[in-house]
Image (cartoon, rainbow, N blue to C red; front, side):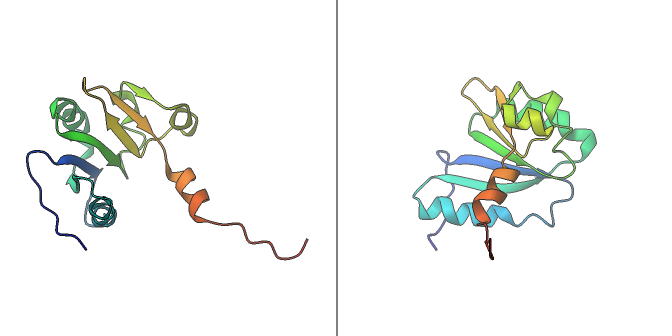
Length: 127
């Protein structure tokens, strides 16, 4: 594994959750970004439901935050706090990833189903 060096040029991604002790995906993402030579660091951020709107508002203003993952209990509650959602997220009614554009606009998507389908190969046994 490549050593992670976080500097002022590092793009920051967060995983918003409550609680955060169960969040383990951030180290996997950090390893993958490092392997691909991307200067991006991911960290869990413990956000209580009552603080979600305040945190989202702050993330809009943080210019080195590229985006954030959203997990339980925020996947549905985050929807009205975003500027836009993809058609997929709108159909599902929940978001698990949000990206921030240069102007601070936040767009949510839901990649849960896509990730499941891509990781799971169909097994055919018989006809």
